Image 1 (cartoon, rainbow, N blue to C red):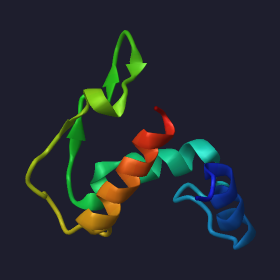
Image 2: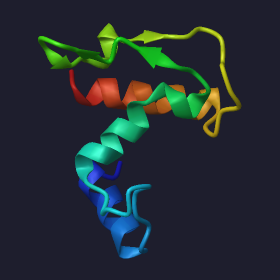
Image 3: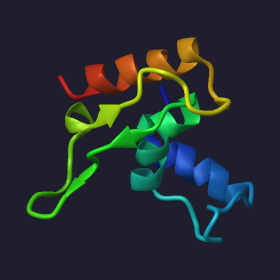
Length: 88
């Protein structure tokens, strides 16, 4: 499995910038891979005034898809399984 740094490095080498025209970082790669918005779902409760950014386990994610996804369920949930396995 490639690391977040390796993925960011490949994207930067290929000249693929973020939507803000910045280079990719390992943090941004991880955020994109974990974000249910790319799977057609919306997440709430991602930040808190006191604790700041919350863990994805604290997010409230819509059960129904709210828009057309760009990542299919099987791939999105496989990535989520891999990411959670890395942190065990």
